[in-house]
Amino acid sequence: PTLIAHAQGFYRQGWMWGTAGNLSARLLDSSFWITASGCAKGELTPHQFVRLSVAGELLEQPALGAKPSAEASIHQAIYQSIPEAQACYHVHSVDACVVSEWSQTNSLPLPAIEMIKGLGIWDENPCVELALFPNHHHVPHIAADILARFQVQPPQVPACLIRGHGITVWGNSPTEARNRIEAIEFIFQYMTAARR
Image 1: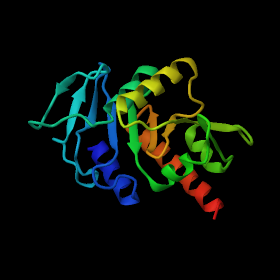
Image 2 (image 1 turned 180 degrees about the horizontal axis):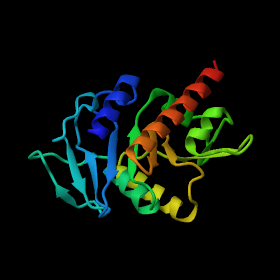
Image 3 (image 1 turned 90 degrees about the vertical axis):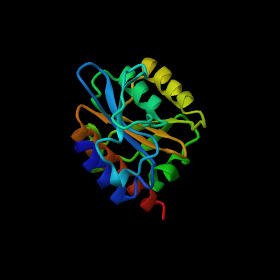
Image 4 (image 1 turned 30 degrees about the vertical axis):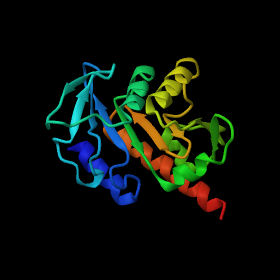
């Protein structure tokens, strides 16, 4: 019910139009429930989730024919590289796509505004870099990039951005993941507004 409510909220914000985006939550055995592929995020039901092992094996399928989200491998990469992550949310917003094109490197500088505290940054005038990854048609390639980088260079904030695609955040609970999505999307809206 929590993931369904959060998906509805993100849909209303315009961050999960149509079937875009996906949400997952990890269980004690490290498996995780994730939204099934092709489901309208503003109208999810409990049967529109599947349970996967952290290696990607399908463990439970409440609705016959339900398949994992095409971006399940991104969630796997986060759970494999961030042990404390208990929920992982991926949304597609216009602002995220816009700001992702503002850096030609593998990171995006974030402004030192008050909302940065929502990402766990409490320093005075911090210099914050958001991990930025290229988009690939083959999503497991994106996941492999995330896993490879985070294993040697842990992210500064609990989020990563895929160029022209969207933001992924994680937290120690679904509620924390939701709050972090809202914080980072506020930051992106501020960045785009500041350039007008």
